[in-house]
Image (tube, one colour):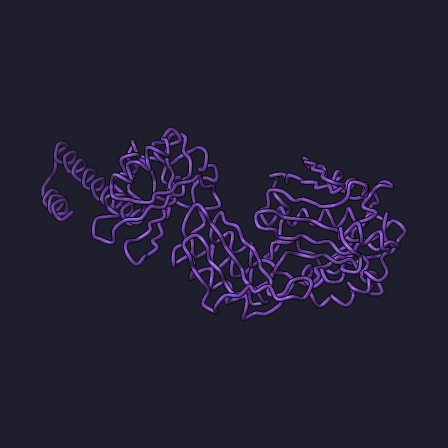
Amino acid sequence: MTDVTDAMTTLSGHRPDGSHLLLAALILASTVALVAMAAFHTWRARRHSNDPPPKDPGSSDPTQDGATGSADGAEAGGGSGGGETVLWRMRTTVRDAPGSLAALCLVIARFRIDILTLQTHPLAEGTVDEFLLRAPASLPSQELTGQIEAAGGTATWIERADTHDLVDTPTRVLSLATRTALDAAELPLALRQLLGRCTIHSLPAVSVTGRPTGQSAPVEGVLEETVMRLRDPSGGVISVERAYLPFTPTEFARARALVELDARLGPRVPRSTDILTLPEGNEITVRRADRSDLAAARAMHDRCSPDTLGLRYHGPVSDADRYLNHLLSPRFGRTLAVQTASGKLVALGHLLWDGDETEVALLVEDDWQRRGIGSELLGRLVQLAEEAGCDSVYAVTQSRNTGMVAAMRALGLPLDYQIEEGTLVITARLSASAAEPTGATGERTARPSDERTVRPSGPAEGARR
């Protein structure tokens, strides 16, 4: 701009002709254009200084490579090579030496596999590396594990994962701790989600007949390869078994921390309730129950006929009360209670954790049968089972109990029947459809003012359960 000013000053001191004026105009226009272009590039550089680098034409979409990628990533879309992909969880043990993990990563990169998450589990000798991988769907898992073994990995294990595994470990652990803090019945479910596919048994210290079982564990628990035994805060032992994969000390510490949290918080059950209206206009309340309802449950037993109790407990009627303390414990499942406006307990529904399986059971007082209560409770128990991630539920009854059979059929789910010497086991395979929105406890949220009308089924509706 200084050169331009000098040139214009020189020209103004002389008598310019047409050529000088044209030259001055061209110089001024060019200089203004250069200044404007420089200012634009400076503004653009500052505006985009934090943008990601331009994408390599041969690379995949970055939105598909991380844990926040497409929810379809478990089957297709994005990821490695831009083709169809699947999610894998893989574990392998390596020497605790520099370069051992790098050797595994080179193999993974060679197959154009994305590492979404990585956890390390230190051992006394070596380290267990756990990967969540997005791999091409055409890649056989055997080929990958073979190459991992060749690169120094041992005891390699791999299985298909899904999009739920994309949640990072700290977030998952905090979520499980919250659920456990709000509901004591969540502890077995939280352990199963924390540790993956495993079998959990709650072994009571005292049997239903009142005799000691001898089940106990030290405060610090016991870890034995594929089995861990943890002291149950409510008495007895929580046994966790995973035959296909040994537990690591890190997993054992996490499980023990959840159990310690449960012990510190003591007994607790969510107090949400639903108020329902029966066809005759009476209102009933459906809520969660626990051992504090033991006296009311025994009083209901006293009002039930021997036939009703016999169909429910499949044994001597005199032993019925012995089961209540076990059934009402949150450690063994969830119990729903139905009470009248006067506060009298008239029905119980149980969802019981039985290792890898889940049992449903109902008891409706004689005077309150055939009003739709049994079907209402059964539907809610199945919903709780779906929210807990159960694949199926089963009911044990007698072949003459047409009411329970009708209630199971009314669920509209695929049923399997097994009968032996008059005992009927009905298994309902739960649908994969999404459950309705839930609260932090994993059960449907309800307010005391929520009201709904119960419609009775036909004459065969859960009359005995």
